[in-house]
Each structure stands twice: as structure tokens, then as C-alpha cells.
Image 1 (tube, one colour):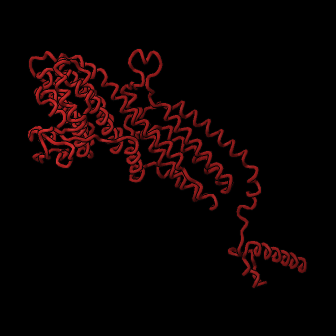
Image 2: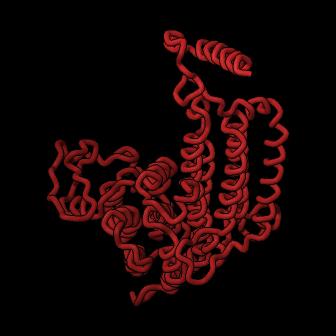
Image 3: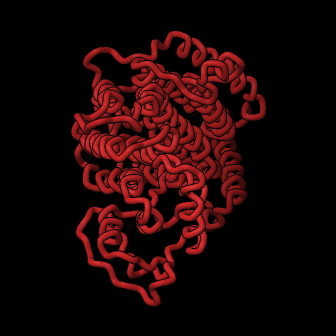
Length: 483
């Protein structure tokens, strides 16, 4: 019996040595009496049995994907697209449930294997989250299309209710939550899965999907607010600017614009994070400023009194826009936003000052205040002033001699440095040799107005989004995958 036991031990040691040598542990061969069955002997049996099943676990992965997708569909169908009263997160409940079912699936799989099958399941998680991003995107209000939309003037426009605006904010917050949590999911899986798969556990494509949802949602929000302006912009063109007898309080259309902001901005300021609220404000100002400017050209004849009244309205609109950060109770971006609004609305103010100028100096004023203007735009200004085409010809000839978009009177041979005027956004004309002013007073007024167009767009928003993902602090759901 003793000899039999010793033989078994000898055989065991023999094959343990061979296994150790196969794994590259050559140092173990130097001591023939060392028992390689103890911990640290250069091998272990962990995963040997489960690895036998790896080639056949695709069926398991496919079943998990089917189950997760079915759960996702049910969650979206049950989603109310609203937040319970008193909620501190402003995040859709379906997003949290999605990550909970992913967590359960991850725990089930990691208990079986941490090899190829777990990595394949991670790819399933990517597809599930992309599908959820698509669901969020699809819930955003759509622009009007088709014959009915064209007939009602809504073609390409987005009509949003107060509830729609809240839902859009919830989608923005939910997409940001998913963007952050999906990154944490990838980090957590990379720590569990076998090392050869760790570097490939990346959620950047999924995060891009949620970033796209945020971009689309915020732009939809801006377009929805702009669509509400349509009625007031149309009302502005119907005011009899050519026959006004006196300048009074701000016009009704200005009060209408103020009512739109008063109804929407406090809600948006409460629901959106400061970085997204600022983007919304900048985009709104960059769109409303040029739109207000172009709307002036849609009016009929504008008398001097009418131009004075419209200038008062323009300044009232600018004041309303400047008060929006306070209305939304987010004053952190007020300084930069104020300069932004002033720069955008200054062009409309300059246009009205051109209309107010005397006929014999209208060309000089236009070139000084709007140096990037065009001949067709200048001719439309003459129409707004009520000049007949025969009366316009000599003025247009004089403008053409200067060259469209430049200001070069023949009587001046060298630049005159204008007096510097303090203003939020000042362009020093002395630095622009292509603009040679005739009158210091006109030039000073142009400098006081400030010129230059603001550029926002996708690149500005992507920068904001990137800074948000870097700077956002840990939330209550960040620890979802750390337990």
C-alpha cells in the first residue's frame, strides 16, 4: 500500500514538472524535491474547466442579447417621458433601468467566465446602449414636412409645446448620464475581463451616439423656441411704420417675445445644466439677432418716426435677451453672454440708424456702420426710406463709385483715426485701411455699435460637450458598476 502511494506521488510530481516547464517556469526543474502543487508553483487550475466551454457559449451570448433587447423595448414602452415631482436627477427612469439590467447580465457572465464570452457580451452591451440612444433621438419633436406643413408655413419648422420643452431637457440630461455611465461600464469591464481583451473594452462609439443626441436635442429646443417667434415676427411687419405719428412704449410684438421667454426660460434654466443652458442661450441669440435684422427688410416703408420706434423696440428686445440669464437663474454665463447679445443686436441698431440718416449722407452712414453691406441691401434701405427709383439712382451711382462693401470717398486721401468710444464690443476702424471715414461723428457711432458676427455651431457645442464630460462631478449613479 505504501509503495502504491509513493508511486502516485512520483507520477503526480512528474507531470506537474512538465506542466511547469510548458508554462516557461524552467527554474522549477532545479529542485526535484519541490512540491509544485502549493500556491506559487508556477501554474493554477483557474479557468481550465470553464475554458473548455468557451467555443460553445455564443448561444448564451445570443440569448442574453435577445433578453436585453426585449427588456429595452418594454422599458421604452413604459417610459412616461416625465419626471416625478421633487426629483433631483431630471433623468428618465428607463435609462437607470437599462444600466441595471446590464449590470445583472454582467454579473451572471463574469461568474461563468472572464474570457472571450465576457468580451462578446460587452459588445452586446454596446449594441443595447446604441439602441437606447436611437430611442431617445426618435422621441425628439420633428420638423413639419409634406403638403400640409408647406400649406401652413410649417415646412422645416419645429413646433414644441411646454411639455415638449421639458421632455427635450430630460433627454439632454439622460443622454449625458448615459454618456458618463457607459464610460464607467467600459472601465469596470476592462478590470474584470482577461488582460488580452482589456484594451478593446471601449465605449467611445456609444458615447458619440449620446453626444449626438445631446446636440440634436439642444438644436431642436432652439428651433422650437424660434418657431414660437413666427407670430411676433409677422406682427412686426404688419405695423404701419410709414405712418406712425409719434414714438410710444415698446410695441405689442416685443411684449409677445417677452411673454415667450417668460414662459419658457425659467423651466429650461431649472432643468438644464449651466453648460448646456449657456449653449442654448448663445445659439438662440446668434439666430434671433440675424433674424430680427432680416425681418426689418420685410417691413414696408419706414418713416423717421417709424425708425425711431423700431429702434426703441430693438433696444427693448436686446434688454429682454440680456435679462434671460437672470430669468433662468443661471448668472454664471452672464458676462460673456451679454457681449454676445450686444454684438448680435448691434447690426439691427446700425441698420435703423442708417434709415434715420439724411438722404444726402445715407451712403456715407451705410458704409460706415455696415461696411460689409451689399448693393442690393443698400437699395432695399432706400426703398424703406420711401425714395422712388428715380431718386435712388444718383445715390446708387455714388455708392457704386466707392465699391460695394468698402468706404472710399474720393475727397479723402488718407485715413483719419477715429475717436475711441468705450463700448462692450468695439472695432477700431483705424486698423482697417479699407474703411476711410468722412465724418468722425459717424465713425464714432459705428465704433460704439461694435461689429462682427458671432460664430457658434457644431464645433463650439462639441467643445462644450467635451468640457462637460471632463468636468462633471461624480453623481449618485456613478457607482452603479463598482459594487
